[in-house]
Length: 209
Image 1: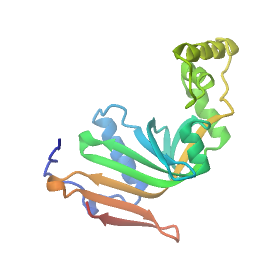
Image 2: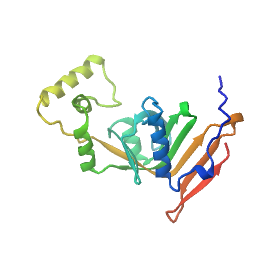
Image 3: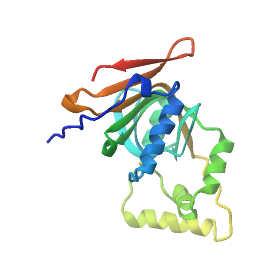
């Protein structure tokens, strides 16, 4: 199975913003305006201490000049790997637009105050779910998860604020490279990478497809 990408205008050096943040904002806005389902969905790839990789889909919740933020149980597989081996890669698969964005960088914890502020904005069900789910651990059955949720709902009855669990919080991927990929005909895709140099400046490079 294969798909031939359109031969229309792709991505040129002249199209690019001077910095990755502005360029990402442009493309993210395009994905939202195009009505793509969950345009903030991204693949997060991590690796354990032995270098064995794993990946999963999560939702981007915030981004700015500091990097890209998602939230998780720190004791989940991704949480444990990201903190033990603090490097990760993100992939935004906007294939309907013939675009991808790939981010590689180091991982850091989000400040606790920032985590708590975000958690307070979550739907109550999601807040209770964070307390109920021992993410990535083995469950006996579905009933066990539902019992844990019921226990969390009893612990925090309606009208009672639900605090962020101590094991739950944000992770920020601080980019070292941000690549913008645009599909072109004959597999001659356009790829541009923003790369942080040793002096902290960003260099833009065209990559071979």
